[in-house]
Length: 188
Image (tube, rainbow, N blue to C red; front, side, top):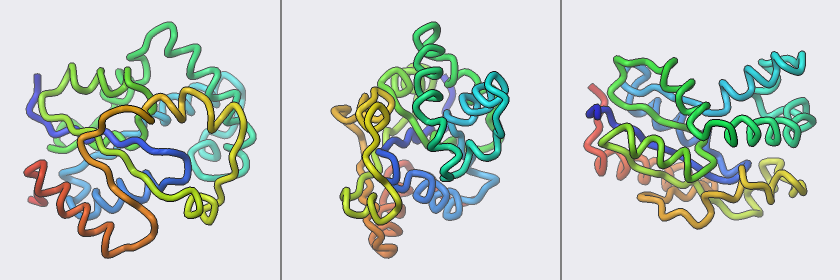
């Protein structure tokens, strides 16, 4: 087991996981805090297998939404064969020198189990916001996406920390400060 701090974030689509984790990284410094996206290796391989534009699958575009359901099914098939597949890939590409790894997009209990099994200093962090805020951010309920395991598997998980991200910047910064203090992580 390593003493690296691993913060495993989860949340619904359009809850602001990327924004919150990027704010945390800005607070801690890129040299200290590496953002690891489990969806990165998934999207890279899916794009390769299906002859798609990988860079467009990384942003919040209509292009990604067009392929989301198929990408989810493909990812489920890969995880059925090996639940640790995407976790292993993201850890292999991580910056070993960073003292904090932030997993930006955990989707399943098996993701949480992987990090808790392999690292000693792990906290799960759930990003939440009201559905009205998600709608303002462009969320529209999509059957077979928003009710799929990839969106719902961690709904009943007992997270260590919950961060409310309804758009109040002062409140968000206060929560990030509290998270930083709780994990005893500081910008060097």
